[in-house]
Length: 175
Image (cartoon, rainbow, N blue to C red; front, side, top):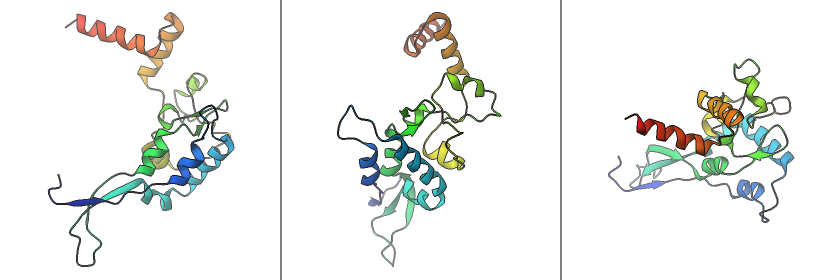
């Protein structure tokens, strides 16, 4: 906890938000532009990564007026990367990063790629694991929970919300 007055040196990127957001609700961002942006950010992650954190500095500063960074939080730019649907997936659609999977061919869950939105690794050459998983929050594998949800959807036509309610009711009745 910080008990002294502090400043947050945030980083915003209005240009990214303008490129990804469209003025018309029915219009989606340009997919090719999203591909280029994703590849650029992945390739240049070491130099761009300083913009993903907003340092918290003591307001009193040091003798040079710079202030000492006490902690860092996610910047507005980093949050913007996660909140917009701009990640191109196989099939031509755009999703939010948290809804996308990055499934490698040597993964045991690679077979599920037909059923989950995933990056088309034949068209995208992303290499930076830190950017893909830690900054964007793209999933690296299909979890057991997701497999269970898919199986229940196929067998009983249960959506995720109905399944969650059923599991919750079962858990509370056994207590």
